[in-house]
Image 1 (cartoon, helix red, strand yellow):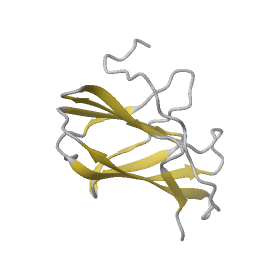
Image 2 (cartoon, rainbow, N blue to C red):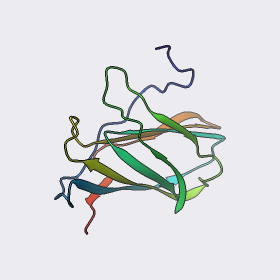
Image 3 (cartoon, rainbow, N blue to C red):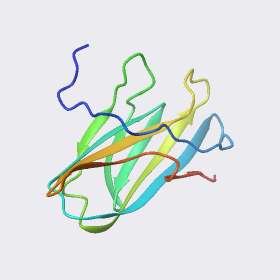
Length: 135
């Protein structure tokens, strides 16, 4: 497999929340609120060990079956410039892990920004909230 042109330098860490199963599935809400200064580019890279739906500032961005825990990391990418703004922002995801999956549950996301002062990233780590969904 050839390297993708837009491949990020990963700073993100896999995250998840322990949750009881609802039937044969486990659902988790993932969320981060953050402040942004000026930026000209915002590219997100996302993958999960099962399914996810991604939202930015309350607006649906996309969904992914892109399974990221393989020999080579695979991911979905999204241009978020039109959805993010200077000031307060929120990124959220609803993730589902299906019973019987050979992979542990997990979610990975990184947003790479370009701004007047250079480049920076926001990436999943222990500061993101991960909460089990209730039935």
